[in-house]
View 1 (tube, rainbow, N blue to C red):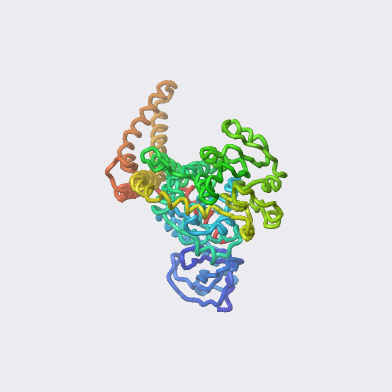
View 2 (tube, helix red, strand yellow; view 1 turned 90 degrees about the vertical axis):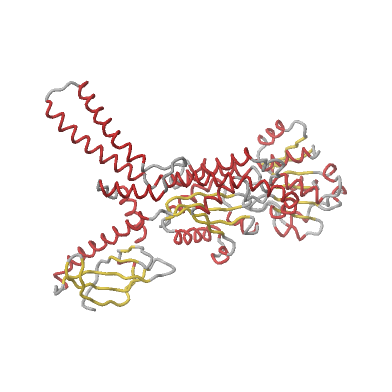
Amino acid sequence: MSAIRITSFAGVWPQGELFYNKKDLRIQGSCSVEMSTPFGKQFVSVALAQRKCLRNRRWGLAVAILDKGSSLAASTHKIKTSSLEAFQQLRTSGADRYTSERSSILVLGLSVHTAPVEMREKLALPEAEWPRAIEELCNQNHIEEAAVLSTCNRMEIYVVALSWHRGVREISEWMSKTSGIPIGELREHLFILQNRDATEHLFRVASGLDSLVLGEGQILAQVKQVYKIGQGVVGFGRCLSGLFKQSITAGKRVRSETNIAAGAVSISSAAVELALMKLPEGGLLAAHVLVVGAGKMSKLLIKHLVSKGCCKLVVVNRSEQRVVELQNEFPEAELIYQPLNKLLECAGEADLIFTSTASESPIFLKEEVLSLKSASDAAAGIRCFIDISVPRNVSACVSEISSVQVFNVDDLREVVEANKEERKRKAVEAQLIIEEELKSFEAWRDSLETVPTIKKLRAYAEKVRASELEKCLSKFGDISAKNRKLIDELSRGIVNKLLHGPMQHLRTDTTNTRTVSEIVENMHALERMFDLKLGSASLEQFRSKVEKLSE
């Protein structure tokens, strides 16, 4: 086989990925066999090939088709032509394979239930970075849409993937690269859910059923923010947009139709409750309290501190304006603003310190805390840090100081367990609502399967209508614009009437009795009857994916 110089390839990896670029391949041995092909009786060169660009290299077969008995020089053009034709066939079969199977909705992530704060803080992404993350994820070979939900308690990636197992690999590799966590270590804490399970998970998250504090309300606002930010990002596509929109509806219904939010604590209120548990009795009223940060979480902290009788607080923040707004919102409390450069000075005067900032690195280090004077007698000489930020604002080694106690979001479990059973009973009611919203979303998603067929059928009907109308009008000779318009409207009305029945049998919602299988059967029947081939847009979309695979 050494006489044959293979110049172009068409091939398939074991799971169906296509390749056709020789420069990306390592060729290991080959042989020539005579076989029947779509182009007649030909010699086929079969080579064992390996892609250079993959870390986990996989072997596949590459083929170059040669006419029987042709010399190498005479058949160079035919090698290229036949190989390209063979590749076109492979690409077409690939298009059928990808378009005949629905893409998967996946969620990969970790939360307070699966991973410690030390790991979550490495993966945390500020809102400003979400669009970039979506773009990077959608640049992966098998990911069509993406969304990021990153809070203090969870980091979750939602995607629509052409192939669920390749999607899982690409997301986990991206998470590992972004966070610097080895992929083996990351996998120990990741959860992976697909399709209905992934959808149900997001609905439970938006409803507060998956929160550390069952029924807490802030998570719904965070899910809304994902949807809001996603509207301006290309990779936040139709499917995920519909999914998050439905999850917001589910979250609202659960809160309005059940009592799960009644008496439920938030992260901020749990932090205040934890402080009450750790300080000496009556200590909160006498203690000097410092709140670092003036964002949403800090606002909730101040609200709950004031409700417990703590009416004098020092607030350290980068800008004064936000603290002024808090002063106006809580006129019954004395909120004293201090700039960020006074942080350590204020900390030295405080017994109880709450931190809630978006800083990506600790703002309290061990050396700095060691230099502070001791806490007052109101706190029994023990300074208490309650850090509800992710990434953490207080360095882990600060807890090594004997006169200091440090608590983070993972330590709030102690408070949460107190009223867990009551909220569990309320969660049963919420689950029934989630099931209803799941059915609604699945019906909507099923309806998307028929959208290309509906469009193609309408385009086909419009083409026939326009052609026949033109023939008709040409026979009339001179005709007024008014009559021309009447005839045009008549033809459109006839077409719409004729299409109404078929269209109704292609649409699905939660009110009709047709099953998904019946609708899909109707779709295929119409495609056969009217010869509705795969549209050029779909082919172009698939072609771009194939070209990605070969890069």
